[in-house]
Length: 233
Ligand SMILES: *Cc1c(COP(=O)(O)O)cnc(C)c1O
Image (cartoon, rainbow, N blue to C red; front, top):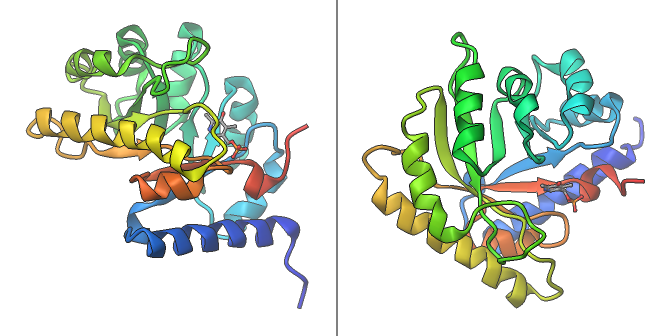
């Protein structure tokens, strides 16, 4: 028997960590999804993760992602988690199943118009600047309602929830406070859009350094890179 590779054992460790946190915080593990963030990592590593049972992969840079998607399209589900540029919306709409970083009606319209008709609707999450940082992408919490209202008119999109990259904090309690604000906003919006968006409710939050707090506060998509693939150069 071969010794498990570093990647296999890292992935297994992350999955164990997730299961333990689900138990501790009384979450159904079936509702906490692992998105393996493979930016800067080669296709061979994604292939190895696929063979170890990982299905969902997140990429930030379109050009880099297209090369990897080309060879692995059938087997993996691809999530775009990087900044959106208008001239990239067509390729994003054609090659990804999910977009986590939608923050404008203009990009929503462009993604909608470019989504191929044979494909399922593009699942989108609205990115919120939950820690109110000048440097961060995403819209203000108070702007989410109007944006979602507009997105309802784009029938090739399916609005599934919210995403945030909160300020990095050192303690569990400080991390939790940011995640809780996103969860509370989700609860309000879910109430308002209940009839139009019955599947609205996803929370894309939590990375390698704060996944436990994210699970405690209701994350449904953990975006984990380093803990699975190792440090990026
Ligand atoms: C790179 C990245 C991640 C993964 O971060 P790690 O700390 O490596 O787990 C998650 N989300 C986004 C948006 C990223 O760009």
